[in-house]
Length: 306
Image (tube, rainbow, N blue to C red; front, top):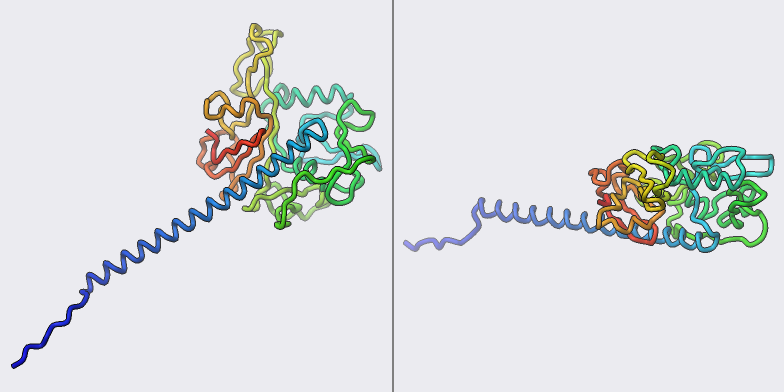
């Protein structure tokens, strides 16, 4: 009787092994693709923030001072029926222009109200884009007339309303949704005067933040002088030496070698990143790992800054 010839084939175990390997490879591919997409988005956002930083530098070269910090809680002050000024962080009402300028410089050096955050979400839309109306910045739509700096007879930090029109220093490009009336958490703004609440949103729909500060110096006025929490004590014998660089804690410690660029920086632009969170008190916080930050001078910091 002729023997039946056996046909080789896969056992059930072999098939299962192949399936498991295929699933693992597919999973690794998906993870790698997701990581690549996230990395690409972060790189694209970093380039956008760099464009904003170039706009800040161009503004400073053109006007003579960096965009000031807008008081986001109450950004526009009507001094008269047809006269407006943008209310800045650190200013007070009814002050002489020269006194006010000095007070704001002291504020940025943390000599007054040392624990208050020096940050604005409205500064860049106001001063880089000119989103305010003609009654405030002298131009309907994007752009503005020349901002005034003290000493001037008109309100401090107002606009000339006459003369040369300054074109925007930054453009959101084709993604017009990045420039929108919004609340501090990035939600659509539905209240009065939506134009005055226009913010630049990052690609994860969080408002981009603009920080400003000035270094605090040792003085010869005595051993005790103001400064934010954690600032070294004043030493009169080191008069005019930097006592505290005052860079925001979220950027890291300027005294560390890897953060040396912060020693000469006076502003930063920060996107909270995909998780839409920023820990303002600790650069090493896990929620800062995906922050995207560009500082004065164009240096980029990715995540934490420490």
